[in-house]
Image 1 (cartoon, rainbow, N blue to C red):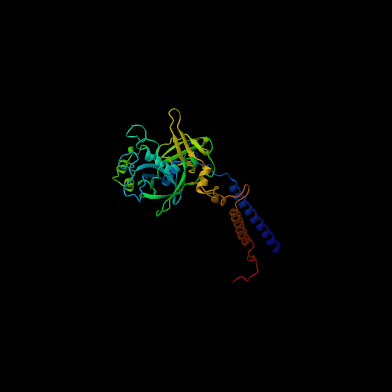
Image 2: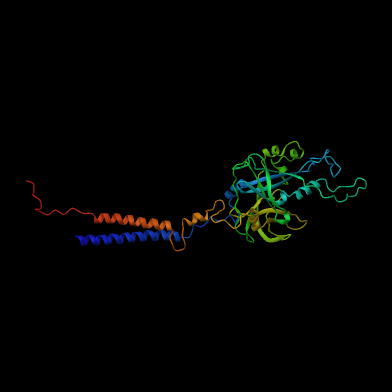
Length: 386
């Protein structure tokens, strides 16, 4: 009987090993299977659902430029053009959240030199009233007063800025040095940032540029420009009920160029005034660069430019791509590492589960076959009841 039990135990142990091996092999096969194919790309364009989600990270910027006032002057300084005190100048740009509390835009949108040009160009060149000839070139002018308002449309789902706020210019690089700027906001809920692409775009890659229209805003229920310019409303009042929506336009990377020694990417997506500072993204929703320049020649194609990806990462202090970071809607590398191991091997977790499962099954089988059984009855072993 003991030899029979030993044989049975050996068979049970062998069966447990076979079951464990089968389970391990099955999990290994599943781990080695190629990942499920990604949904087909929409001709390289960004998925509409992802694009709609990205809209929540887009911010409209209205910059008010005013002539500075000398606090020690008894009387306001006369206008350099000989006219009355002139009204402020308004410029419209776009920004986007690169962190829960910071906004990125183009440097020229907040550059005081650009504001000075806007103020001086509203009436054209100065004319000498005695001769009618252009007045001599003016001396250096003081930097204008700059106020940057940020807003998001009231109908935008997931908007963080529910009422226009003044944001602070933390740092910027002018157009000829990279055309980037970072703004800070305070006292608001954390926003949804956009990821920066870890690698430079490829020639011919499809891209999408996003931003607020600036030149044709009077054709929408957007910013009340007339009320703002007339001084009858404050910027907050003008922007409070804004229904101006960001627009997107698609194209491809056509070339890597250099502008005054700074690397840029030329794209053939249509850019318009107001879209400056907005992001140009790839099909995964990663920012490749900032909408920087639009030049309209008399003959030929527009020269539309975005900033360099590596320079943008350097300016924002992102450095190299962060491991485990993933664009919206994409699984992170950390999650992938927890579900699949190296080639030809099962993930450690699935191996442990397979071995434990095989051991449990083997133990149950050994208990069933090895437990004591009652001896069989033989005639005459017990007294028959009378």
